[in-house]
Image 1: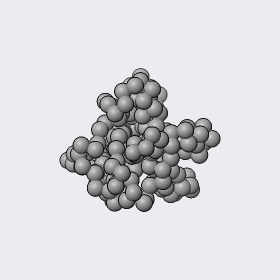
Image 2: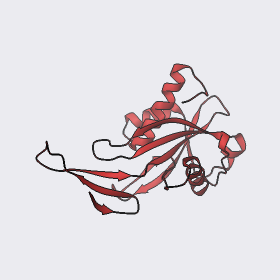
Image 3: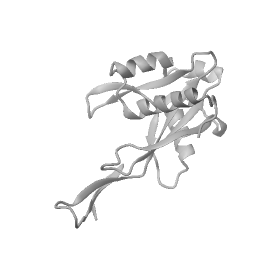
Image 4: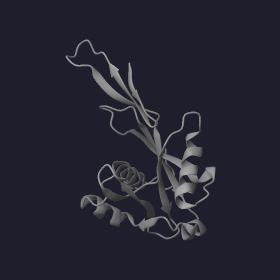
Length: 172
């Protein structure tokens, strides 16, 4: 049963006869994010945005991301997000799916799809909104709890797993 409807999510209550209390969960349209990669040198640098997050009162370095819009193709939503936040016009062939995961399956149906976006040298030079980090830097920042956004940590981990497996540019 729908309890509350918002612009981003809906709150549902489900009667679970085997439980003492009803089960509440967040219904979500899903989201997408992009691991923006510059492979023009051998550093495999990743571009992150600085976003102020009022819920925790901090500014975080994280992937560009957007909640999905029902009826719009996920790739179009991702390209639009990248253009709005970085000014980068991304063509379809630059997007490849890296992974998809549920953000908090204990209480939410949100499925986050993470794309890999490989920039050209010219795009990298024009991407003023992004701050660039090497993979070793990102690992250090994650371990020091300076990068604490879950989607960003998951994307970096997934990308490094692809590199470790030796698939190079091939992703899911």
